[in-house]
Length: 108
Image (cartoon, rainbow, N blue to C red; front, side, top):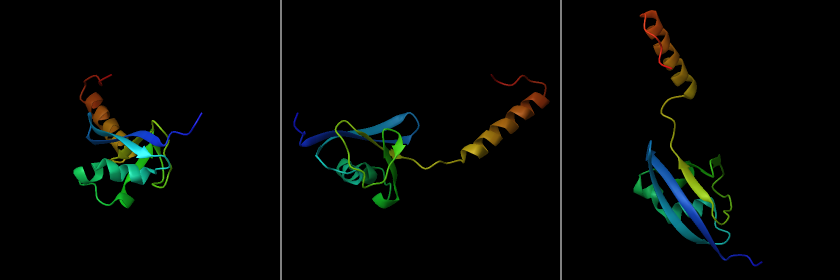
C-alpha cells in the first residue's frame, strides 16, 4: 500500500455552545496542526488572535502546534474556560444548599 500524498482533515471551532464552524481541507502529506489552522481560516474568521496563543488538538487531545497530522484527523480549536470548573461546582452546590434551606426539593 502506498502513502497517500494528500491528507483529508477537518478543522473545527465552536464559538458558542451547540454551534460548530468546521472546514474540510485537503492538505499535503506531512502537514502539521498549525498548517491546518492557517489553511482553514477559522482563527481569522473568529478573531482568535495569533496562532501561537491558541489551544488546539486532534480528536479531543491537546497537542503542540507542530504535531504532524494523519489522514482523517479532526483538528479542534479550544475555547478558553469562562469559569474555573471547581468554582462552577462550588456555585452549583451553594445554590442547591440554599434551595434546600428554603424548604424546596433540589433539582435531580
